[in-house]
Image 1: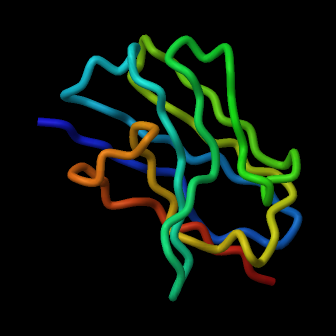
Image 2 (image 1 turned 135 degrees about the vertical axis):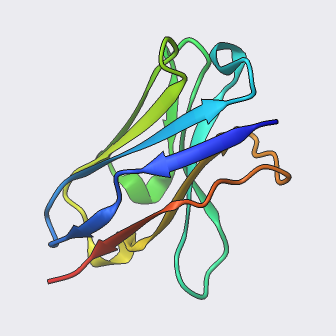
Length: 116
């Protein structure tokens, strides 16, 4: 049974930084492309970034604009998203999943709130 457990969210001021983590179990993590997604209130869930199984290649949504970094530790079955220069519009629940996402498996997400 696949489990994805996100953590590390919180309240941060505009311009601040936050790192969120996602621990995966029930999958062979090291062979999966992993992604971070987010869903803001009243909006559809969208892709933020993904990282290849080896971690050698990454892709970011246009709105990231160089502010976020996705990384992974295959020994820990964990994927990370370092977020810098956060903006009000980054407020959302952040989720991890395979890329492309498996809609049958979503974790509870972690809330990131950017507010002054």
